[in-house]
Length: 122
Image 1 (cartoon, one colour):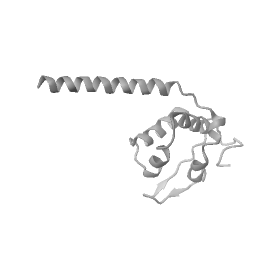
Image 2 (cartoon, rainbow, N blue to C red):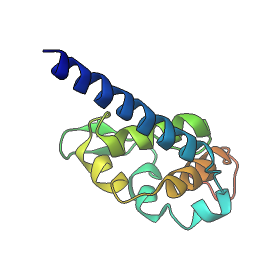
Image 3 (tube, helix red, strand yellow):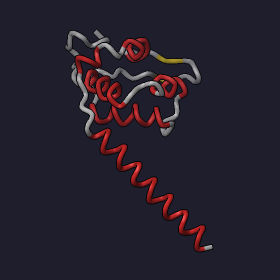
Image 4 (cartoon, rainbow, N blue to C red):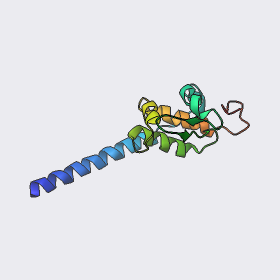
């Protein structure tokens, strides 16, 4: 029984350390709005249409992303990628994004306002 408990403690410690290493690495990533502009073509197809609703896999109102908080956008994209947020289309799209891609996309949308020239909503 002690060996089993010992293994779980070691596994938990290694998992925590791995999570810390990933978090530390992600903390070093800085979003670049200019780079993000070239990475949002797929996003604009849904998120650039005012009042757009998707019908697959369920009816869902798609939010406009321009002007959203950068950290919120990064957290949401990471959650879709990990499967913590459940929307199959977003999971499929984010699965191929790197931490840098996510930071750049979030920086791009966070830099916009309703009057931004590059706002896909305008």
